[in-house]
Structures are given as C-alpha cells and as structure tokens.
Image 1 (cartoon, rainbow, N blue to C red):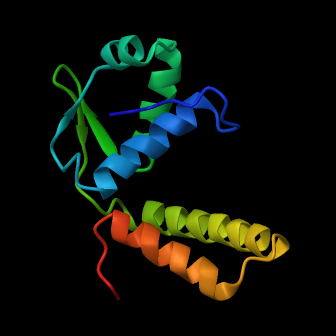
Image 2 (image 1 turned 180 degrees about the vertical axis):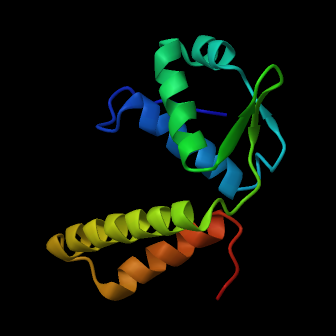
Image 3 (image 1 turned 120 degrees about the horizontal axis):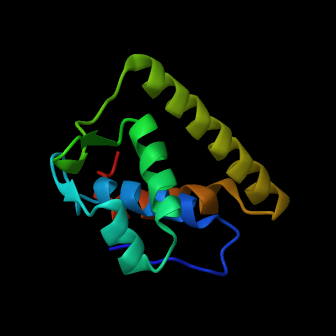
Length: 129
C-alpha cells in the first residue's frame, strides 16, 4: 500500500501522509476502512513508530482519519469542519502556486501543464470536466 522513497527530499512521515491520502483519493481506501495500527504499519514499513504516529496525527488533524480509542484508526468521513477545509484549501492553493512558479521557471507551457494536470486527474478517477 505504501512505498517509501528513502532518496526523496520529502520526509518519511510526509510520504506516509501523502500516500494514504492518495489511496483514499483513488478509492483504494474508503470511509470507515480500518488502518493498520502504528506498530503494525511501522513494522511493515521498517520505520520508527514515532514516524508513523506523527503521520497519523497530521492526518487526524486534517480530518482524513479518526481514531476510536480501543477500536483503532479509520478513514474518516469526507469534508471535515469548515475551518479545517478552508485551511487545507488555502494550503493547496499555496502549493499549486509553487508548482506553477517552478513550471514557468522550467519553461513548461500552459498547455503542457494543463495536459499533465488532466492526466493526473484521470488517474484518480476524475471526470473529463
């Protein structure tokens, strides 16, 4: 489910966050699905349990997962609180701005950038619109 890239500039906990969110976006994980425990996932990935715990804390803060004491950690119902949704949307816009700046710096055309965006959108089951 999760493939870590030890050569990536992205910290391991962020890779875990990103890949779990990607699995949800692709429909691999759905609302109510139980995630492995911190210990189980850290053993599978061969990483420190604190790294997985940090990932889970971030996902929980974002409203992506929910932990039920004594029962486990589950994929949460989409659309968290309006404040959290606004914060995440603003963060997404900032990240998109940074990607666009980098694309322009590399001389990527708007058409190529749009084609890449469409291609990625489709990978996640997005429609044509």
